[in-house]
Image 1 (spheres, rainbow, N blue to C red):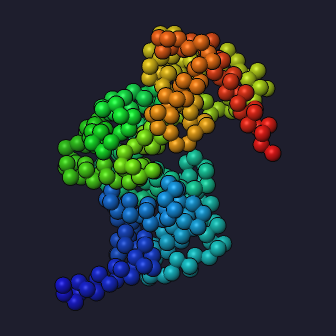
Image 2: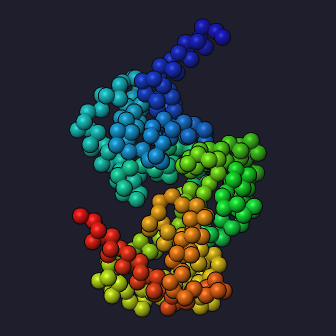
Image 3: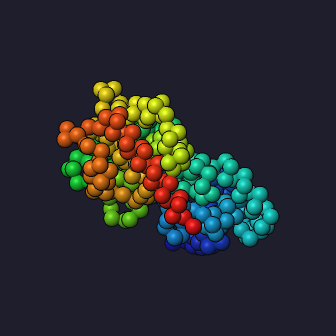
Length: 316
């Protein structure tokens, strides 16, 4: 290696040590360069130090300081960003990028901030969330080809390939690049690091527009339950009865139960969903044909409202 090469390597290592984000900026314009899937994962892993799937607290402060100071032509320390400036910066930043207003940055929000390869960015489906969990469960069934209850690496690669084909970008992506995308998506969304995606992990990769059951009318205890109108029930029923045949069944039922399960459990897999189905439906005269009616849906929603009231009473 030449002296110049050694100097460049040392300079790069120094930049990494002092400000991780400087290496991703153009040295002349100081604009952020387009990140590859692997580089994006480097940034995410560097700042999500506790690996909990969010950049928050001190992690977020560190990211913002380095993100801003790295834009300077001179290599100033991130500590040059004062506490007052950080407070103002964080407020502006979170207003722009914290879509769900939870006070922290998740992987999808960071992907909107950093410039990335167009084809990799497509995989986050920012402009095309699913209409409901019914569609999600149909996709789950389609790509869980071995029926294991998990999306393994090969199944995930097939899913990503079809996403790119749908966007008419598959010819732009080599097999090696597709493997890189698959590995990166697994690193990002495989929270328990078992090398595959369970239901709750896939749900983060493939979000729906809204979990209708999170609306306030279903969270107001018995008083709220009495406020549930016929229109409320009909709205929920029509959301899940996608084929309009007068009953909720198959993937429609799984989608409804997935939304219901998400209200009480953050991390869940296919077996959790099956167990939850048995628990929820055993008290509503569940049809042996695997269907629920409007009456049964009403009973479940009333039970949901009662559950919220009991939780509120149990909270000191």
